[in-house]
Amino acid sequence: MSKILEHKNILPATRSKDIVMTTLLERAFQRNPGMLAAAVELHQSGALPAATQLIDLDMIARNARLTAEAAATHGLRVFAMTKQNGLNPFMTRVLLDAGIPSTCAVETLQAHRIHRYGFPLGNVGHIQNIPAAQVPAVVAMRPEFITVYTHRAAQRVSDAALELGIRQRVYVRATNQAATGTAIVGADDGAFAGLVGGWTEDSCVEAVRALLDLPGIEIAGLTQFSAFSYGETGDPSAIRPTDAFFTMLRGKELLEKRLGLEDLHLNVGGNANVGTFPTLASYGVTEVEPGVSLAGSGGFHAKQDMAEAPAQVVVTEVSHYWGDNVYTPGGVFSFVSDLYDPEPMWAAVGHDLDTARRTRIPYLYNQMVDAHGVFGGADPMPAIGDTVLVVHHPQAFVERGYTAAVSGISSGAPSLEGIFDSACNQLGPDFNVLPLGDTLEHLAVLSAKYRRTAEPPA
View 1 (cartoon, rainbow, N blue to C red):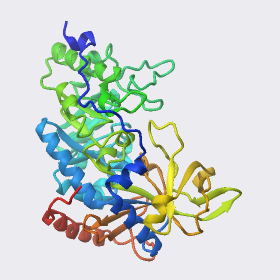
View 2 (cartoon, helix red, strand yellow):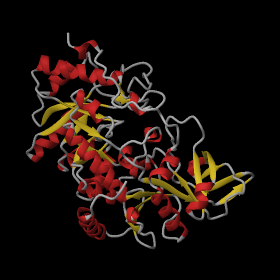
View 3 (cartoon, one colour):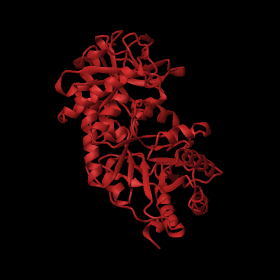
View 4 (tube, helix red, strand yellow):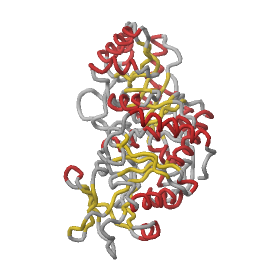
């Protein structure tokens, strides 16, 4: 029996440093103060609205180059996960020009928004089967892979592919969860409540055998989320496979041995970054889907100086006070997480960077429907209209705030390239949606700019 089937093949950590306990906000002040200075300057000048996630394109380009180079070293193909950044197309363009080969969409809604701008899709459907009526449109986007959870989902993909005269490669999703009972959820289990589905180790052989009769698809590999964990503390040096990942490995071996399938791919989502690539590759992973790491904003980035540096910050403002608390416009606090940090998350606040560096207010909660972000006070209290900066583990795709792409920060000349709404439409000065053609023209100019630009300093 192989080590995979024995469930014992655990590698040591890829890095071993003393953990430096800090926060993502402090890490941003240490490694990318220019981004924070630009955020305050653009907001105070009126160019950047409150409730915006600012994306530093220069640092994104740097992080993407490091990611692409490390992935190539370890034989991994990268599908950039941009949901954390609101699927901002200017960011996506810079990622691709920096060497990332493709993108991924965990759900169909995201696939439409990525495809709108002509970007390649590596994988669609990681956490959602494609809704029935939209399967033909997604298959027509020609993604490299589509993830399926059920025979019916695979049948629909096959039918749509046959209509186009193609054969679509699919991942089958492996799971360590039982279809009945309470989901196993924990740092080492690799499952999240509400994100379950697929085939178990016991059922995968017969289930996939039936899929082999579908003429429009090719069983190309397996996928699982979440495959690797930092444990409860978020220690980047303690990366280890989850139980779900070992289920996927055993499933791969069973499918190859009993069905004669060869060279099946292994796609993993979650905790993929430059530091974890060696471990992922050592287990035979073929595709990775880094997300927060591309903006240096995973909770684990607070614990060590990892390769990727901070490239994203929430920008809002002091709206009013109520009692001793500070209220800010909401729309960017539906998902607030400074992962692995048991202390309250803090924001910096001020009318310039020096003031913001000195002044902190603790995040308390968001009000109903995220109308406001509610923070504790400071002494002295910040002024109405002061800029509030929050750096955390973002998931902008679940929020209604803006995203803004800014270039030139590394050279000290920040330039606001564009503001986008939560549906990835570029907005004009009057905050009305610009024609798609205007955005595509701007994308071409931006692409040429970043292809010419040498790597900015870290």
